[in-house]
Length: 84
Figure 1 (cartoon, helix red, strand yellow):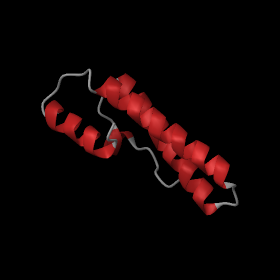
Figure 2 (tube, one colour; figure 1 turned 180 degrees about the horizontal axis):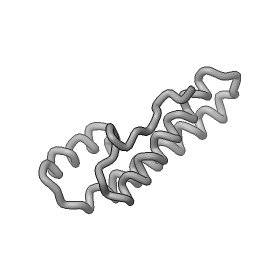
Figure 3 (cartoon, helix red, strand yellow; figure 1 turned 120 degrees about the vertical axis):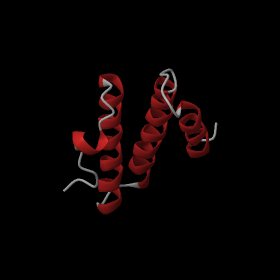
């Protein structure tokens, strides 16, 4: 069973590009979670986590190009989540 199950009703923002990226993020989170529960070497876990962090940072850049109510606050949350 996945750690996070994607559900359009709960997670969709009705922007195809962003929903696609959110689904990818959920998949990466699920992969990392599964690796923590399994017998996997630390190098592989680090690679999974590095991939998750890199994809998240790239996603934030895409998301921040959109204009919507609360965008400034959302951008601030991104900076707090992944300080760069």
